Structure formats: C-alpha cells, structure tokens
Image (cartoon, rainbow, N blue to C red; front, side):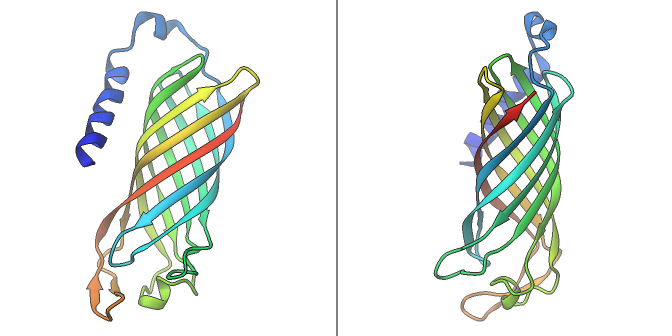
Length: 193
C-alpha cells in the first residue's frame, strides 16, 4: 500500500513540474471552495480505534496549481469496543497539483492537531495530554459541476506525534507512543465560486 501511495504522489508531482502551455493559460479553477464531508480515520494499535466522522472544509485556490485549505473534522459514535471515540481534528495547509475547468488532482500537505476528549476511550487508557500535532499528507481528486457544486475525494496518511506519551493497551501493558501513521479517507460535496 505504501508503494501505491508513493506512486500516486509521484504521478501528481508530474503535473506540478511539467504543466502544459495550454494549462498555464487557464484560469478556470474556482477560487473559493466550501463543503462538508464524511471522514474515516483509523488509529492503529496500540490505540486501535477507528470511526466515521463528519467535517467542514474551506479552500482558497491561488492558481490552477496551488490552494490553501482549512478543515475541521469530528469523529463520534465509535464502535461497541470504542464508544467514546469523539476526537476532533483540525488541519490547515496546502494542496498543489493540476486543476482544470472540470476538476483537478492534487497532493496535500496540511499540518494541524488532533484533540482527544477528556472522557474518551484513549484518555481512559492513560493519555495525559489532549492535543497532539498531526500532519495530513496524501492525494485529492475534485470534480466540478456546472452548477457551482463539486465532489471531492481525499486519501492519505495522517501522521500523529505523541511525543513519547505512555498508553495502556487492551492487555494492560504500558506502551510508549511516538509517531504513528494513520490512514484517513474522506468523501465530500460543496460549492465553489
């Protein structure tokens, strides 16, 4: 899976460094985007949680090739094993790639945070801090419709730095947490103008 991810990033990079002269003349990409999305985040062992969530996103495209984004997601519900998932994630950063009149494909690089609730399952396992640095890297595909709406698909790796925090796993063993890779995917719709 990591190899496929690296190939996808390399493919997107080709559009960044070798844009066609026709694409350089275009100014068709909408400047402002706002939308809602369904999100899935998987936190691997030892935390071992995963749940769907919902989120909102705002973007401003500086050109056909680069845009600024802010996203806020909340994960709730969890599963029978983790009923108090409840994390909130905020990401702020760049998307870069190739945008055209009907859509685009981009790479994303968005630092931010993940917040664990005071009464959540992870906090009950020994996490003492509530907020941790997160970095979302991955790919984005967008499709623009004529009525100022769009469809968006994101896939990537949300890297979370726990800074050596200690965590009690499901077997009662104390495990140090450093930096983890966490698969995240989202599908959303929105408006642009």
